[in-house]
Length: 279
Ligand SMILES: Nc1ncnc2c1ncn2[C@@H]1O[C@H](COP(=O)(O)OP(=O)(O)OP(=O)(O)O)[C@@H](O)[C@H]1O
Ligand SMILES: [Mg+2]
Image (tube, rainbow, N blue to C red; front, side, top):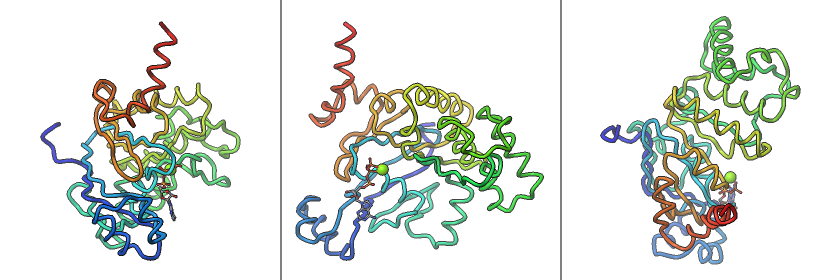
């Protein structure tokens, strides 16, 4: 496993929002901070030079405070956002620079996304939602129904196929979101705070469900979370972001035992406090 080339490789990725990104880019390369650049140019440095390798089959968690650039980073990976500079290699192909048509193909077959607010079509039934990507792929109706039902069964919702999403609880709706992402057999799943809108107990159930599925599926998953408990529970490795940069990348154990600096220690404080309470 270790010897395989990385599934996803980010090289010096930069995303600057605003109408003068070149000017901001120059300042960033001169070593100016995000705040300096905002003050000087009114441009927002959202991703400030990130390089990262994510392995095939890895469940990789990105953590960080609000505004640290997590969503921007995953949206660059399926190029819903075009990076200002840098490379994004997926299976060796630099998708930061492929044509839009090729990108559409990649989004249809190789990458799928699960959203925080589920992103289901309210007027389509559960099964129609799950089949949606298969329809875009051009799969004929009988086959896509079959595949859709199989996938719905994986998340335990086959008896809900003909209901509208509004008849389902939040946890069930997110299972539909997950089934829709799994139905296309995409090898890469991007999950942007998928469980944040759920109650704590349901959220825990969904985390366990994801781990159960991943055991069989071996997808490459990038999972964004605010929550250190969630990150530690599900992540093979975790990257902690701050102001568009990565502060530390490592297994939960390494981050726990060798926090890179006080910023990481502050994140861990909740866990230390919880342990102290139990003693
Ligand atoms: N379309 C945009 N135009 C300008 N600035 C943006 C845009 N989208 C995001 N930003 C800025 O980029 C930075 C990173 O935003 P991003 O949404 O990636 O953060 P995040 O870590 O996902 O935050 P959250 O945890 O709140 O979802 C923020 O400072 C944000 O204000
Ligand atoms: Mg976000």
